[in-house]
Image 1 (cartoon, rainbow, N blue to C red):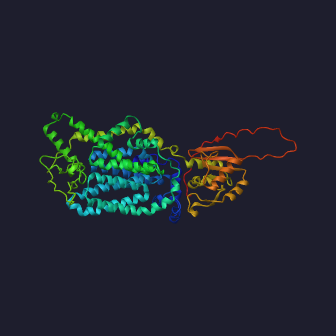
Image 2 (cartoon, one colour):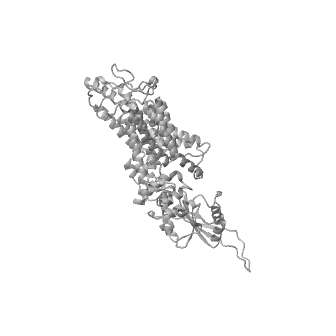
Image 3 (cartoon, rainbow, N blue to C red):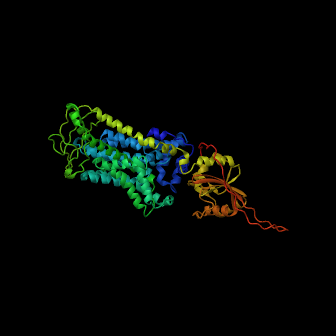
Length: 596
């Protein structure tokens, strides 16, 4: 995951949201605090983190490195969950599958918080599993009471990085419900979750007042849900690889305790947010990126179950008797013990029994590739006491070569979908694959604009272009700007009154516009009165001569239309010709970001 994240990390340009991260991260801590009172409070902790990172070395690579590290950490945590909940090869396959999922790689190279949030959720889920395991061992029950607080601390930090991560609590609650844990476990989990939610509440109250920032979101439809499912469930969204992944996920649903953790994580947060968004649009796939971790776990568990089914068809009589016996013993040991209370009726474990042991116990022992921590046992849900475990067997044979080959073959098989999707991976690492490239627009401005040229940003958000790459805009006249964003506590600055802007535009015979690409002309009516003046005056009194478009943003030159002149001899009447076709200018090499 680290290698894939670093591949093409310096793609030569930031897009709009990354530009916001960059310019806010370069402000002082008091300036960031001032900003959060009016906008982007939900990203406050992330901006403080990026302030520390960019203070070391400001640049596009440093901007994205925390996300790369977050994605790498998540891949490792997914693997650790697979090891704890199933067996080592399930963890290996799940971690590799998470790493090669295109959606993971996309957000690993974004200068935003979503990959780090995914790492926090995966870490909290692993701590939840660990807390449940420790609760089942008598000698660890004192430590188990303290093990909820690391879980709560990780949740609290994750919620502060993005508040929609709180939906993972619903998934974790469903896991506990499926495991039929005793009331003491519910109490410990509830205290830790309650503290995390309590820390989040002030942020939720402030961000509620700033909800206009997500007014651009729309009610998700069937296509939205289908795209999310295809992006989450497979390395490729269509074809044989996709349907194979779906089949393996269905097989993975029978994987006992792994399914009780992975399935709620995969399904519950997206379903809740999609449902709420039918009434108040709040959904975007990046807000629930952390739920993706459940899919590779289920796929890997399904592949493991498929191998087991095929293994039972293997003619064991062809093996030497001692090898066949050793394979059976290893298969028993490799099965991980169930979650506290188990998932079956009566609290019995679904694990394999050996010899004359009671059905509620499993054989425990150590062999290469398995953990040495105490196994989980059956729990009396009334008293919370753990049932005794049998003494471990003295020694088991080494894992047979066939098992090692199966593990290696599964890992190598993941190269097939990765190579199949290699063109998509490569294109995703191009700046053109993002919504816009601010560096290209700024480079063109540096070539076309001259000191003193008037510039307008429509809407004012696109001033982020000049703030992220200020060099090309040095010396130009920003007609609408009254106070910088850093001083005013806003993202893009405070602008002059509408009447004053009209007066400034009256003396301009030409103006450069950095605008939303679908504006001018447009039926859109801005809510900001200053933006309405920009749109009305430029669209009504100026004609476009040339423009450059990069995704959602464009740079265009507008020339004032010549007013009619009274003459002694009337000129021949003629109809005004159509406006000249805009000239799209190729972009020069993008500049490097400088200090705003």
